[in-house]
Image (cartoon, rainbow, N blue to C red; front, side, top):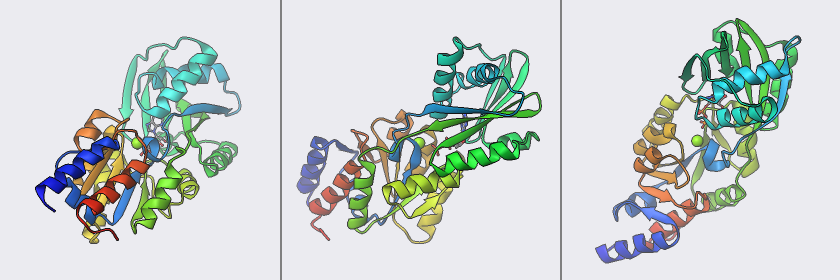
Length: 293
Ligand code: ADP
Ligand code: MG
């Protein structure tokens, strides 16, 4: 394509809410055959709400919400914000933890009101020998089968309960996946969340390939592995932890609603935060470069 055609193409993109970093980006867009999609905030709205609290015998609900809520209030993770908000609504203003650490892709750990508290994946609690009872393990599995995310809470050496958080698929996601598939691309769902939740969300939007339970730092390796298999990979993400994978991909697309570092690491910004804009970007590149399949 001529420089003028590329310029016209990027200009048309801007009108559609597809911000393209440079004319050469259209060339890489055209070659993509695999589209890796982050789950939370990309396929789903990322707006989580606390929908249920299930306690181990002997645990006081308000105490669990106070301790878990205080710790999560110090975290910026969407799951954490949902828990802090739900806890505040029920027990009022939350304390400031005496100590706090974020454990990437696993949860949070800290000291609240003199208690050593853990909130996060069941496996994080297990690292500290805090085991959920078989009843709660079963409740957790049931909720995850429904596509909900379950976070375990423990303190002072014991698992105390679970918090059930729900996210919803964006209305536009399923349609975008149908269109991406129709263009001959293979969508792959990539998430740090557990496999049952991931599969449920994938089924809801029509994605067959799921790569779940991937730690934030390992997302980039998934992209590298697909590239090593000969795939030309587009990555679509929104989060701080997606940035390295967005940069590694042959084409990085960031949700305009996402983190600044994700946008900076990407070649294309989808201003509206709508996956259908990714379809627009691919159609535009094919049209501009004169290779409509
Ligand atoms: P995603 O890839 O879906 O954006 P992350 O990699 O950020 O998710 O997190 C993976 C998992 O780690 C979450 O699904 C959750 O179970 C757990 N987790 C991470 N951060 C927190 C937190 N602050 N509170 C509770 N759980 C967390
Ligand atoms: Mg995300």
